[in-house]
Structure formats: C-alpha cells, structure tokens
Image 1 (cartoon, helix red, strand yellow):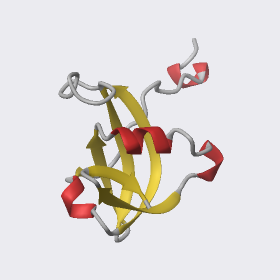
Image 2 (spheres, rainbow, N blue to C red):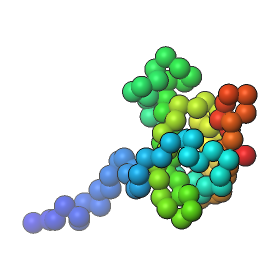
Image 3 (tube, one colour):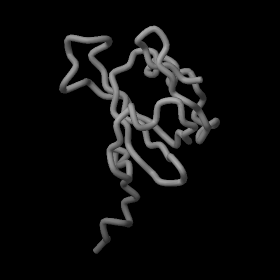
Length: 101
C-alpha cells in the first residue's frame, strides 16, 4: 500500500512564516521581499482592486508577513520575475500611496 508522500502532492497554498507587521513599522526601512501572493480581499472590496497582497518579508533578518491592498505595490510586485526573488526594497509613502523604492 502506498504512503501519502509517495503521491508527491504539494500544498496549493504557500504558508508564510513570522508575525504580521504593520506597514507603518516598515515604512522607509530596507526590507527583503522573499515571496508574495495576491488574493481577493476580505476587508477591502470597496477600495482599490478588491485584492490583498500578502508578502513574506524580512526586517533586520526577522521574518514577517505584510497584508495590504495598496494598488501600487500590487501592480509593481507582479512585474518582478519569480527568478529575481528575494530582493531588497524600501516601501515609501508618496502622495498618500505606498510604493517600492
């Protein structure tokens, strides 16, 4: 009889590690972006794209998870090839919008 691991099935959803951190705690600080996923937003259906960006980041070598509906960040991160992860970035607030710098 086969064991489950013999099927080679991998989880469909990526799990991120670390505590959730507020955007205000990482603004204007260099972070490492390890991975991301975009899901339908449960909280922000009326704002932006109705999407939520989940990012696995490191700040001072400690892993955290960020959740945001910031359209600028969602649009920008989708343009980065998977082969370029991880990368360093700073998130800034420009004209009341979050952007990678």
